[in-house]
Image (cartoon, rainbow, N blue to C red; front, top):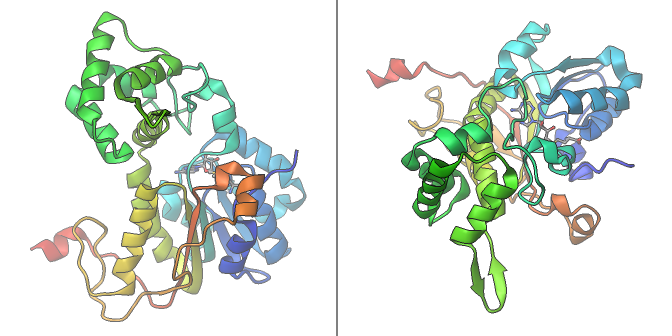
Length: 322
Ligand SMILES: C[S@@+](CC[C@H](N)C(=O)[O-])C[C@H]1O[C@@H](n2cnc3c(N)ncnc32)[C@H](O)[C@@H]1O
């Protein structure tokens, strides 16, 4: 079956690739965008592709087999972007793409535990070598820690009520399956309004997934490393699929567009008075109705793109705290 990459044309438009460039695809997935990148950079170009899910990586390698010599596959988390890219022999890159979140096979395969509609184990790890699973989160986190996950990563106002219900139920027997947790969410939080049922299970599952994969911290760390690695004139394209991710991206680049702001929350930047980036997308780019009809999973996508126009150096936090 044809693999549908989200915002295919826009990704290529904002990556502005030229023959012979050095590019990173931080989220290879099934290799859809990477294939387009390889066609653009030609035989002299280099692609470094991160994918922490072994099965997706293998499938992408098969799809990209004609370009073997030009691709460095990194079966790793993009949180190690800088060290892996330098380790692969490149100090600088011309462009980088982040197409965040999960891929279709993750949702389709019940055994991975990502879907609240399919019976499966409480797993949700992108990288199955990692120790933390959804089962550990649900069965061992304190009531307060669980409520924080649902509130911070699921924007759930009734987070405490849900956390309390989980802690009560797990005293009887630990949770072992996705449908058990989905059933509890429905029992505790689903409401009927105007004849319609509103069930936040998708949002709650997403919050557990974010916790299991430490997605928010990973993204913050990687954006900063990407900005360091980019050449002046280099492009960064980020596609996010929920508001928390998009907020991190927006806030991170706002600090680089309108310096000098020293943010405690994000990395701490050089004392600069000129913008570090040029914004290529004034408004985030979203899929058209046509694309959404063809590929419903694209519906929440937001693409933001920037060009690095000035050198970017991270100060050690301790240096300016004193
Ligand atoms: C939306 S899919 C990418 C789809 C891909 N662009 C394509 O065209 O096929 C996101 C992929 O990134 C991977 N991923 C997510 N977070 C990651 C991380 N921190 N490090 C490495 N890979 C990650 C996921 O396993 C998933 O396969």
